[in-house]
Length: 183
Image (cartoon, rainbow, N blue to C red):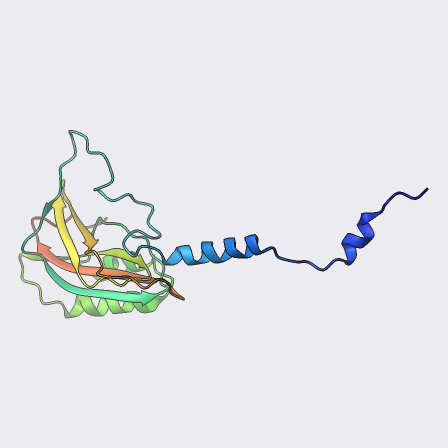
């Protein structure tokens, strides 16, 4: 009596991807193009975190001036509301190292160089979005010695995209609100 040997039959069977596995791959790939203000972010927004008695609630900065909102396809970077000071080339270079493509860093450097700042103003920047939607405005607040930049809500966002967009905001703020220079 011969026992059934499925190993030979299995070896001849062509590899097939199940519909469920294919759908999972497509879903995970599309997830990179989610909500433009939070997709790819590992830092929770201040609205979603609980406040303790020692934290200072950020207040809007009315006299902030948007210098540039720059967007690059698939440039990477990390969405963070905490702005960094961009006074000199060293600080610009340090900020730009997070991007996969140097072209976004060069565009940031050109925008910083062309900014017309008074002596009482400082330029700060942050990655405000990563996803399919491209913000056209930025909300600026300050508190606890930090300046926060957040993308203004989008009117609408594309349902899908081939490449996620990285959006960087450069904003001029009063010098007394700016974070200290990085060391």
